[in-house]
Length: 297
Image (cartoon, rainbow, N blue to C red; front, top):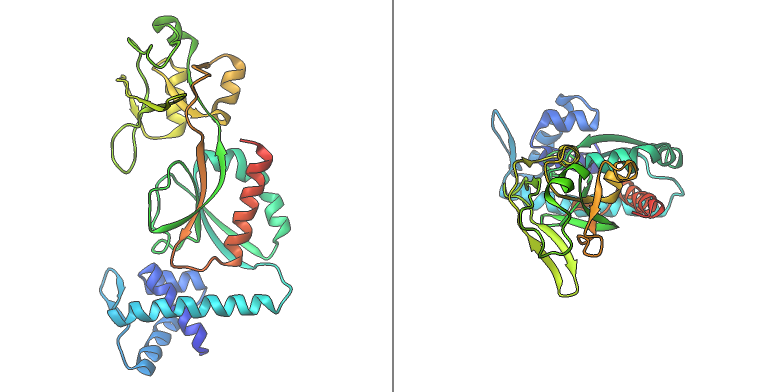
């Protein structure tokens, strides 16, 4: 077997922590994976992998070899790409934040597949910052603050945000006229998946960003439930405008304090920091940047 192919198999085993998952990803028999690793370890004269009934982990030598394999494979892919005039091809595994996918990505996806017919997409949906390497994902699309230092982030857009509430809520509690005018008001508290604590409301003022924490009858984890709670009159929320554009147009929600909006929400494409950006991820990230620019969010 070609030595570079053995390296590819080894890298996939380390990333997926499984012989079976690596075989599935590479579309080869599990026996081929097992035999390749036996030959590789015999040739190098060292054990690269510790195998248990539940997981496969690299040894210290395996970790060092993995780092070198990543560089060599990336250099090989770049060298071959520079000598051939061909579009990216192969499987691209992505994980998309659900509302961004539904509003922006999926409607435009036929255009991407038309541009790159040799690419095959495997798409998952989620809000959490997944372990890209271990879960075999090439890149993710997320919105919000970038706090995970294990990933490289490329900011592709900034989305306008608004504070809003339902007409029924404002009829009961009154409409605040300033950031100081929140006595008697409540919010729908959106809880952070990483800290378990609710995010405060944020308002852009001449003095800077003001944070306001309000009590409320409900806490949520999920963009659709968050907006639905405000429509039901349960409190103030802050969301990107695109999410509730139809509700604003229909009068089911009203913008509050338009002169002190929340700061824009960043949109990111994230990928592992120890990986050279592949041509597959590069064209996908470029295309996402393009569609968000066209949407003028």
